[in-house]
Length: 411
Image (cartoon, rainbow, N blue to C red; front, side, top):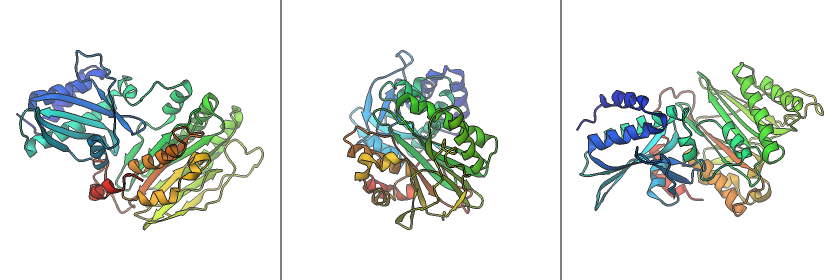
């Protein structure tokens, strides 16, 4: 039985040779062979972050399993939150659950049933296989709908399909200088909320946008808006020009107006700049104290014909250890006004941003009895500082605070 590094290139090569939808089975078969695993399952995290879907790893199966398991109060939730391996003895063998994560993106879980007691070398090799599986899922997700299907608890409407495609491929990202995650709780009729981020060599770009309207009209407006922002960013436009081009795109294509917030952070210096287009003020938590950042607010995108002044680029103070929360007005209006966001942000200070955004958006949804009148979107950014140049970012959890996270997870 071999668990060394030499197995990993062979495993990646075998996965590349398989059909995209069968790549997970390659890892499963490898674990059965190397460690005499009697059962192997891959569980993918739902887009809501509240459940997992157990995908088939049997070549003889249909490739799509319907079993969906709620994360609340489960061992799966604990493994995802802490990003720690779990094992227990059962009457059928040793049950092992390991996180499948890449750069903070908690993709899912690998669950095995081993026929004998396991030592550290075996557990380390299983954890390595799970890390390789994360890369395999990401790479093969470009060629199959299987993993996209697994992330959805129900078939989306046309508007929802458009809206989901506008979100970044991964809702979480970690680097040495920051940890970021966003979460979207869609309303009954969908309101077109989106968030986006991209990491260049030395710059982090983040945006949160909220078009007017509902359903397909808001989805089309969001498409124009996000497309304009991405196109301008990729062309090297500065923040003011990005905002201007987004504004002009909505006007040119007759898709009303939208509020939005654009953020850019220089990773080497820590300098942060912000454009606010009619959007709610962000919140910043510093040394446990939460306060609103009362920046200047310019006109929403699509309304420059009524208020023709340029968008202002403002400096935003960020210090190592700060937590920044950007969100849409669905987090504040209607039922959202029942939720004390600053207090809840302070109470979840020990959680990974992935868990914090889930707690915050879920609190708004719960306040509306599960029927949101407006999309509720939150993006949480932990700033570690420009002095950080190397940091283990594959885990998806701050393991130093894992024990505190267990007690702080529920509001």
